[in-house]
Image (cartoon, rainbow, N blue to C red; front, side, top):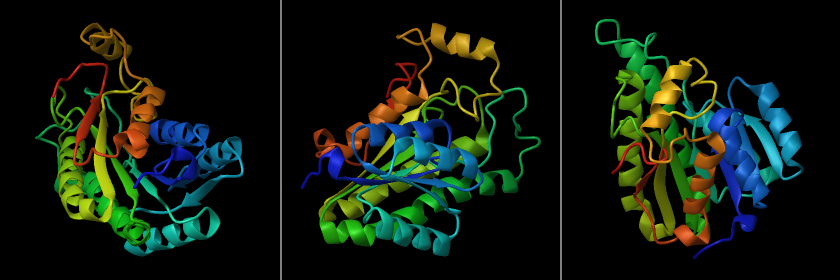
Length: 254
């Protein structure tokens, strides 16, 4: 079964800013109903929902908490309809600044746990919450947001990369289990995007270096990464599941 984007109800975690906001905007542009999840950025999320129109909803939820996620999905269902599409984009607070990162001397288990809880456990909670509605409909699209650092950890952001690696594994195992139900599960892995809150601390020289080493000779934008997410939700991606699409202008192959 397929559904055009105009018939989809899309839940975007971490949707109030950065890449998440670009993803929500892209789906709304194509006519989908969009729920914009946020935790701390109420003002940005509500402003975005207002800009996107009556088929958009801003909703607060901590994706790390199972009960909160279940309540969020119930509210989305009551307001917009049962989610047909989940984009798990939520990110624990992070700054991509190689000079300010924790190395193996200063890294603690709490650093890993913080990233893991939002990426992997948040992914599990949201997948479990939307599954019943998707299973009943015989249709579902789940897209997780990863990182090209998993394939090429050129800067060793240990905690962030480990969490995204776990999310990639969950994406692939979920694809195996949910495929027979008509639900596809894929990942879109961006590189350093120009610009989000997380990449705001990145020195300009780093952006220039990435551009110089990328076949397209420029740094990928949030809007460009968001458009790739649409592919997995669209009818054109109906036969694709368990895949990780790297969207970084060709910086990382494979």
